[in-house]
Image (cartoon, rainbow, N blue to C red; front, side, top):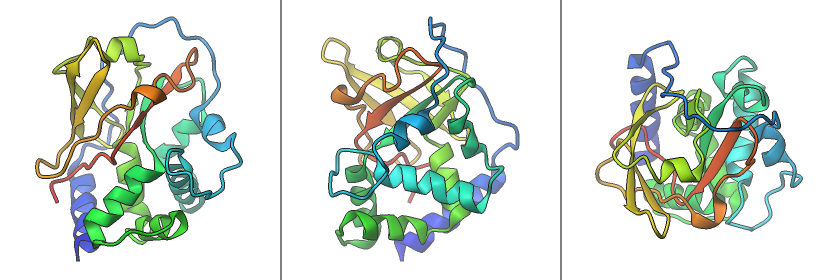
Length: 211
């Protein structure tokens, strides 16, 4: 079953990754606020609601990791003094991932349950693959980063592909060459703008391994 294959592959990749968090070259931006991304994600009450365009599943996934592993590197999302850029898959992105893995579609709670069934270590590794530490990368800077390779808090990398700078079409190329790659969503740019922790919404879950 592909769900088990994902868990095994991510676990193996995580063991092979360096223990130290590699930091991308810090983006120079005038950001001084210390509001954390965790505060932003929790601001809507954090309830499964059938709105596939928001971030309930990624929020619940982060909370589940921190409940099981309070000292997980995922905790950095709660410390607004630490610069980072997160690429946040919306709920629809997780529904697409679960459909790819199982061939089934389901409401938000069941999609989250399938994600959680991968195991805490796998969920943690996938979440960290969406975080670029040490850099506050605005959308304007991302549009100037065509071809850049970003190193994530998980230890893996993904590439930036600026398809059309004028229309802000940016694709992220992950480690699965066979699956569709996520786009940065133009309506979800610069989440938490003005703070050292910033995020951009993406249309699919980044995959740290080739499934």
